[in-house]
Length: 141
Image 1 (cartoon, rainbow, N blue to C red):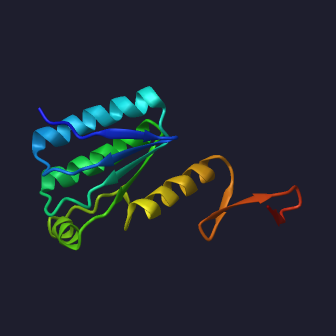
Image 2 (image 1 turned 60 degrees about the vertical axis):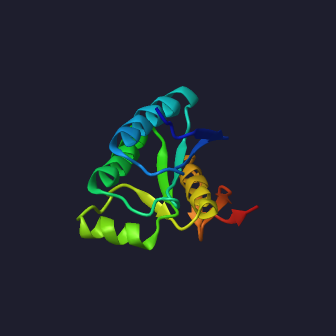
């Protein structure tokens, strides 16, 4: 049975889907990913779907489920590389992917995850950059 590789990059897991997704593969990815989040204590998951030309309602729900399960395991999920046709299909199917954060490409997705991690560590985010504050509230680097 084919598997989708899950790579650890620091505090994040990177999933690059390079094959056509079918239901069994999506379920396998969900199980493998939740296990990896738990084992590695990953704080974020980036799923690159730029190779997917089409998705059906099941795959769309699986992406939403993966994001929900990741959140329960204290990891944020960002889906990157969504093709316009995939976005249109998801909207036409009525799947809003509630709780799924998106970005145009991997670099932007990693920045979203880093920003999210900084927010949970108590830093404020100002225009996408982490800002430290001294005791008087002024910014310093």
